[in-house]
Every structure is written in C-alpha cells, then in structure tokens.
Length: 136
Image (tube, rainbow, N blue to C red):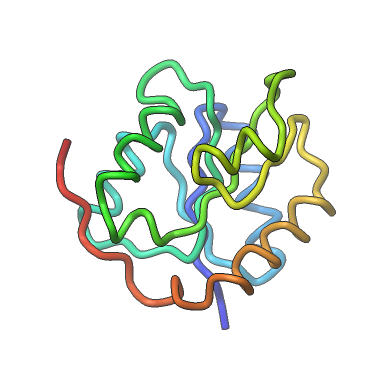
C-alpha cells in the first residue's frame, strides 16, 4: 500500500530530491515550503501517514509546528521525523518535542528510508485520514 508523506522543507532542491527518492520507493510525497503551507494542506482535507519536518525555515518553523501539533489531536497522531543540521540536535531532543525520530542533514538516504519505514510500521493507526486541523 502506498503511504503518503508530507515533506516540509524550505529548500526547494532538498524538497524535490526527497520527493523523488520517496516516489521511487513507492510512496506518495506531498510538498510544503513551510509549516503554514503544511497546515493549509491538512486543513483542506489532505491526509498523510508521516511528516518529514525541517526545523529551521524562514517563516513558520518546525518549533511552531510542534506547538500547533500539541493543540490538535488529529495532527498529533501523525508521526513526525525531524530533519535538521543543528549540531545540538539529538534523538532525545527530537523525541522531547514529540517526534518519532531525527535525520541529520545532509540526509543519509538509506538511514532516511529505514527510519521512514520503521516510523510508519509502528504507527499503523495513522494510516487513516488525518482529522481536520483548526486554523491558527
């Protein structure tokens, strides 16, 4: 079964590259340049099995997304994998925010695919449509 993955990344080259890799693996990627665009997609009825989230973006960054996510039961049941180049980032840091995992930039493709599979296999309940997300 194809899994839908929302890629939230402000770098267009990285966003497109991740989408190509995931599409080649049989997944269905959806793209957002920031968290506001991601929330708009979800509010419009888009549903996803997993979110790949860049933390540092010019507007509406990953930290803001986690604030919104904590307020919404539908959004908080979708697993999130954090992507960042921050040196201070660790698995514990990512999990403390509510993420299921951490990918360091530059992204190791094999590690990404393994983490994506593990994260979606462990969250089969998220395979149902995401609940509507309230506007913030």
